[in-house]
Amino acid sequence: MAKLAEDPQALASEEPREHRPSILRRLFHHRMALIGTVVLLIMVSASLFAPVLTSQSPTQTNLFQTLLPPGPGHPLGTDQLGRDVFSRLLYGGRISFLVGVGATSISVTMGTFYGALSGFLGGIPDRLMMRFVDLVLSFPAIFLLLVILNLMGGQASVAVMVLYLGLFGWGGLARIVRAQVLSIKKLEFVEAARAIGAGPWRQLIVHVLPGAMAPVWVAAAFGVGGNMLAEASLDFLGFGLSPSIPSWGNMLNAAQNYIVTNPIMILVPGLTITIAVVAINFVGDGLRDALDPRSTAGMQRIG
Amino acid sequence: MWRYVVQRILEAIPLLFLVTLVTYFLMNLTPGGPLSLYMHNPKVAPQTLHVLALQMGLTKPWYVRYFLWLWSLLHGNWGYSYFSGQPVLALIGQRLPNTLILMGSSFMISLGIGIPLGIYVATHQYSLQDHVFSFASFFAWAMPSFFFGLLLQTVFAVKLGWLPVSGMYSVYQPPSLGQLLQHLILPAFVLGLGSLAGWSRYMRSGILEVIRQDYIRTARAKGLSERKVIWKHALKNALLPIVTIIGLDLPGFFGGAVITEQIFAWPGMGRLFLSSLNERDYPVQMAGLLIGAILLVVGNLLADLTYSLLDPRIQYR
Image (cartoon, rainbow over all chains, first blue to last red; front, top):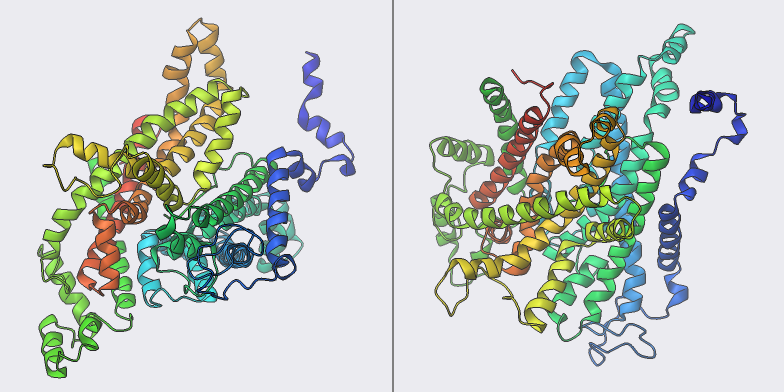
């Protein structure tokens, strides 16, 4: 019966506030999340500091030096147009991370506010807004994306890609946030805020939303990886970014014709994007364990 | 239950209507249009182009064409391919079964390996196998399917020559089931890998969650064998959340088939859809999209129905 005294809730309430492990501390306690963070930091800074790490241009072609094996001057060789693979890899990281983070920021922002508003308003507006989410989610994502990107004829700019991918993944998150808000807005502290005269916006933004954010962060982490993969897949199919943009997807697209003769061309970007997405999902997994262990929000991907 | 199914299908109709309407609009914004193929051909006179446009009905505004398309669809006519002139329904008849074979096999692989694998590692938590599985599943999930596909193709088909590189049947031999299976192995595995990794992870955490509950302790306490506890008592409840995920993933197989079919030159709907995009073949594009949307609706419905089968507390009326 001594076990009863160790009731975790009783202990937690007695513990002084400073001693509760912070979310960051809990996140880094998660070994895989820590490894993921380190790997991501290395990859992101390598692509940010690309001009320092290589003097080669990622887009300069040299038809006298095509398909070179790794060697001095070209640590990872050159591609079919004589462009330096290492340099393309570094600069390509900028594109991939930019698309991943950019698109996810758009969809997470949209999904959070849409879902929060819907849940907070309740009643008929809520039903109408959720009907619209049903509609958005009943679009077969990759097919519609391909149709829309076809308007660009496989020459999309990074901004267009970010926007399109961002306009897709928000529906699922909106549902999750709405459910959270629905349960939180009934709690006493929100009622108390209302009682002391907080307006509806203040109630929503200051009191309800912060409590609903746990699944948002988790979905955001997984979203970054998912969008990076989606972008690479669209590049690979030839409906993505303009081939002149050095992205990992475009590198893979070009490399498929040289997979037997020059396998390094496909292995380098392929393994890099895999490791990047694994690292992101490690962080997402850690975030979930730290913030929201019960949630099933998680890895979603297109294609 | 049938009333519920009918109700859900009726609810889906306005959704499908809006999905097709919006897509039809977007599709028609594509520069060039269906006649772009001939536009720069000096042998095709502008008059001929105009006649073609009239024949295909391209001179009408897009919304008129949409309703014409919808009207004939409701009468069982999916239109004619702008590119080949074949009836779209015939094209679907040729291609959809191939895609369904591919999707079905991948589905079986994901389910048949993923679920038992998840159960196995859940019952061996923190063992070496569990750690290896955890690690591998992250990689399997994160690897772009086209990259994985190309690697497998190069290793097993090109380098080792164990399996055919692409296509559905060999050109040199008469088609047979053995042939089909040989050609199916690589694409089906590539298409199924992501879900295999995902489902086994969900299965693992599902079992781990259920196993801690009182009724499992009771089952163990009354002396049931571990096998019976897991397979008879824990599995059914652990399957619940996974069924939803599987239903939601179903249309993903159709989307993934676009990429897999492209890599392995599998003559299915996905490749048909991709080429119809390049050819501005609107009726074929609409067909691909509509089938994708229907699968989405069916997937969600199946998930909900299976849910009610597994959980007697849920009843649909």
